[in-house]
Image (cartoon, rainbow, N blue to C red; front, side, top):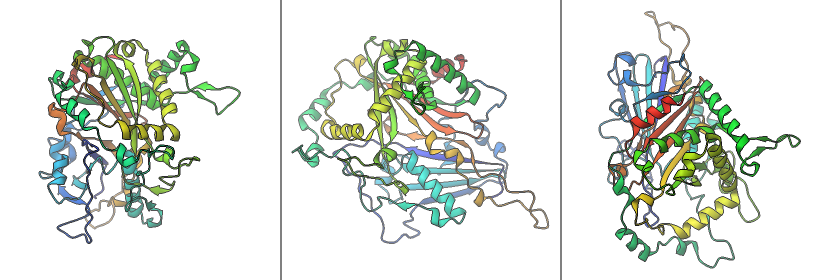
Length: 467
């Protein structure tokens, strides 16, 4: 990696649909070879500056003098430079080939390096990716002893998550078996996807620290009109507890509020149509502690390179959601996270899912199908703090001497592709997806918003007008 003014890191996610009746066995070769490598590694070099490349100049550049939200229409326009022609993209690319689950593509310019990771979501989640990148950084810096123990490479640490308690006589294996009659009814039910006429589209957003501060002020002011029983309090000072909302609570509420209001099809629905907010929760911290009934599944200090995430569900009606101020929605998100995110609640939720998987039937009226909005917040992974400076080679002058000091190896921009071949229309219901990639060195947040009905222009207009 040459001496670069910027390093642009590209975690790349491929989504897949996981069904309980299918299993995806992993084949680990007894010996890695050139034909069967542990990582699908590719590399390309351009003898030019990054901005001289026709796609390179499309990458988002933040206007640091603008303290409002900035929008970038780049969600799907950068692939030509960040992936190879035969790279893995959807599940079938792994199943029907003999490629490794993890892909790494490095593109070098005179002043910039692009790093693209490609993986199945069955392999990694945000915190698993953080563990991988931090271990990579440690090795680059010669700190091999700081690489944590690889937990669960030869067994499934989550096998007992949600397992039936001793008093429950039904076995976990029985509960994992879907009801055939329900499946047959599902196949004959109208699909709510029929109302989706446009392909999903979206925008990347940059939320400066100053704008986030204004959102926080607004959200906290909203709490003055909310019943105290619906507010979560910071009790670190027991004599003076204060209302608490995290940045994630606030920008998640803000993001989904705009995704809902931008969906013209959804807005034509009956006021009582369900709107379901799903807040993705990483379970590593929860599963690192034990209770009398539950043992530690992922010990602290170990690296679980896998998917250990669940969803915290906040149900609303369409009218209720549209009428609620920002702070009330954020408070609801926080309250549900506290109530559903502890070990007892997570175990109960996973136990219920073993029974209820694939038993929910689509309503006969597509306009009453729940509109599901999922938000995944990666800020905790601190991806913008990953530092590859140990791999940066300083430039030299004509005599071979160093020219200045190597520049930082921290990412300046992180882009995410969530590839799902269901996006053609079949299998996708109404709703949207929000993602916080993280907080950059300026203190601003990078957010992504995807509208399932293709309402990206309406979404962008709503976001930019909310100054």
